[in-house]
Every structure is written in structure tokens, then in C-alpha cells.
Image (cartoon, rainbow, N blue to C red):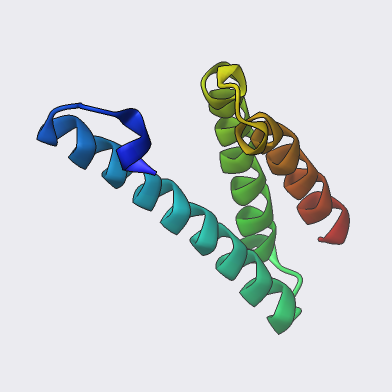
Length: 95
């Protein structure tokens, strides 16, 4: 993916790589923590906090994606805000 940016500096390549990895790890963690709390099945303040805070982070990522990746002429990037919002809805309905 980084090679698609063409001839950019090594620092910019490292920053792009870091951002891709960071967002990926964040999304995997959100999915893991929500699935874990749901699997345990305990309804308490901690599980509610995890659901709501995870939804809030996904909303922030949706807004960021709307103002950045949505402008790129590449369909998967344009779908990100909608996928994030759908994930929020599923988390909040499923809690």
C-alpha cells in the first residue's frame, strides 16, 4: 500500500505505515474487547462503559474517515465511515 504513494521520503513512508498499523490494531482491539465482554455476558457498569466507549471511538474514526479517506477515489475508503457507523449501531443494539 505504501508503495502506491510513489516517491516519498522514508519518514513519510514510516508515518503512513505506522498509521495503518495503529488503526488496524485499534480496530482489532475494539472488536476483541466488545466480543469478550459480550461472551462473558455480565451486565454491569464496566461492560456498559466498554460498549459506549467503543462506540464513541468508532464514531470518532467515522468522522475522521469522512473528512479524509472518503475524499479518496478508492471505494473501500469511501465505505469506512458507513462501516464504522454500522458497527456502532450493532454494538449499541446488541448490548
